[in-house]
Image 1 (cartoon, rainbow, N blue to C red):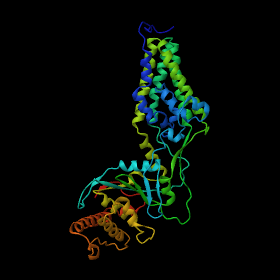
Image 2 (image 1 turned 120 degrees about the vertical axis):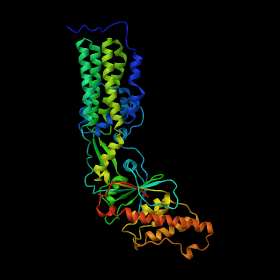
Image 3 (image 1 turned 120 degrees about the horizontal axis):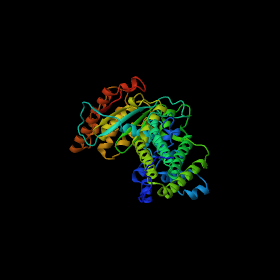
Image 4 (image 1 turned 180 degrees about the horizontal axis):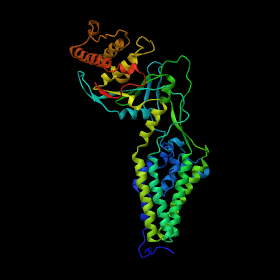
Amino acid sequence: MYLPIPISGPFSLDAAGVAGFFGGDETLSAMATGVPHSTVHLYRGRRWLGWYNSPGSYTVAKRYGQLANSRLWDGLFPGPNPEPAEAFGLDGKPGPRYVASLSGTDMTTGHLAYLAVQISKDLKRVMIQGECGTATLPASVTVIHVGDVTDLRRVGMMSINHALLATIPITISIATCFSCAVVNDWLAFSLILLGIISSGITCFVIGTARLELRAPQTVTPGVPPGDGLLLTTRDVVILKGSEKDVNAITKGHFLLGMHGAPEYRRVGLCSLLLLAQFMLQLLLIPQATLFGQAMFLSSLAVSWVYNSFLSSLESEKIQENLLCKALNVEKDSIQKYCLQNRRSQAVFACSILSHGIETNEDFDAERMLSLFVPNKTRVWNLWRKKVASQLKSSCPDKNFHITAKEKEGLCEEQYKLLKTFLEDARVTFEAYREYTPDLYSIPNTPTCEGKIV
């Protein structure tokens, strides 16, 4: 006994149209950011909420099948075998250059340093008084105080609130599956149920992986603080903290502790299941009744909307929040200052780095300044030497005036240029003293605001 609904007729949905829905641009775009399955490791309880008929099963199978590492799986899913964290977008981004102010370390960084730079880009700026002689391209200085990093074995997860929205596609998928059973369309019922089961199992298997942050836990006794610069094309991020804590950003990385390494056979089996789901749904759904086909596409449409929502949450921003929590850094305690030219940025950043270590022989102020302004002309060489001597001076009153000896051999144009550059340095150092005392008064709890000098 079933409802008298017109479920058959000469019209049938075209299989090519169903295939297009599976491989639509929106689905591919969502999967490019790891959605829906990369969020499994970022939201608490998300691995239990994958039981819905989701589109893009072929793309998911092809991408995550490459995790399985053996001749059999390489034949079924050809391509490179990435690490789990990289496959799910949790690692693999190249970071900026890092230069330490005391230890002399000069190295390229990885994904976590990349996230630190992205955090700095999100900060707002507030205009304050203080003008330099010339304004060219604005450049920012962001200061991050890394807290005491004691336990990196397990990274926290975000609240389950967003993940609970998965109950909507789950409910719709179950409802459409039940509706097909009511009208005796067992083919459509089976295909929707297959999609629910394959997506749910895949989400659960992938979600069993534990997200961890790995970094060197021990340092050589007596090593200096890890204060240093993350250098980008225009902006700079200053890291302040002990060598062990700063290492978490400069040398650390996210790791997914997934069962079955290094072959990851379970992931390969899940990818094979998703591939079978895609093929069966593609070939058999045109054989279902018109009502069953409509129910099938309805379940996919709702799931696609949910996947698009997950994509809009921006996985990188979620990772930034998790990184701040793991490193004991309050995101609203990070300070950002915007300078109006590169040389002012150099003076401001190096003034922050030199605080308390002015007389330390290991602090090479002139080398740090050259990271910002490497020009080798006579004027720039004199400017770096003069500014470096003041940064190395423990006297609170800095003197940026040109001496008679420094003026020797300079033509009128060179003298004017050097005078302008040194005036910019004086104004910048005065702004540094005025607006950064809170950087050192209460560690890790400075006021959050961006400032333009």
